[in-house]
Image (tube, rainbow, N blue to C red):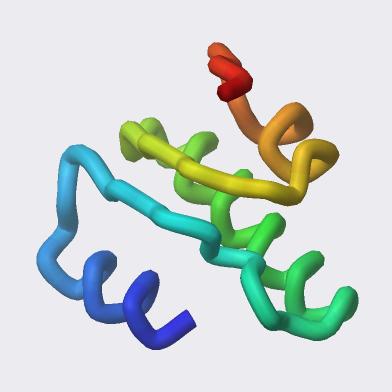
Length: 66
């Protein structure tokens, strides 16, 4: 969560996120998901590598499964 905040300080056009929900409590994961959705609404481009498939599917325009 701190890494997301640090990235937002610089007003980026693209944010790369690697497992932003890893190790977080379910309630906190929902908060992170809300932030990701708000970034999407604000038209910030996101590249998200995530193991939480429901979170990824809910927020992504395009999904690549490996």
